[in-house]
Length: 168
Image (cartoon, one colour):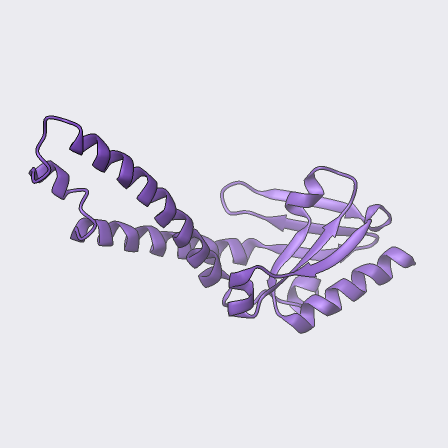
């Protein structure tokens, strides 16, 4: 019998969405640290046109190479993350396993499920992805108990199946 992961698969655009999401975060972090380094150089005895400052220039080819390399590695990580992502209803327990280097697993008895809902963030809307969240009284459920990166039809089917299992 096929698992939910096989019947209601993750979308192939999920790794790209997660990579772009990370790119925005990395850019914000970089700009923050760039501003700090730039102000430090401006307030130091090193002149602003020093070759040391050129390494931190926004038009440095090294910067573009570093950003590209980080994004390629992030995309590869997300592809493997998606490969090892597993979810299924095993008897009366929802099992969700995820992670590449650090494996996380949650087994949530359906009688403990309090709410099931579907949502999207802005990038999910752009890529046509949906997340199915399952909440319970445990602290881990908010962080681990969600299936993210599926299409609208499958998200509604999973939501319906989970609610049906809860009400049995």
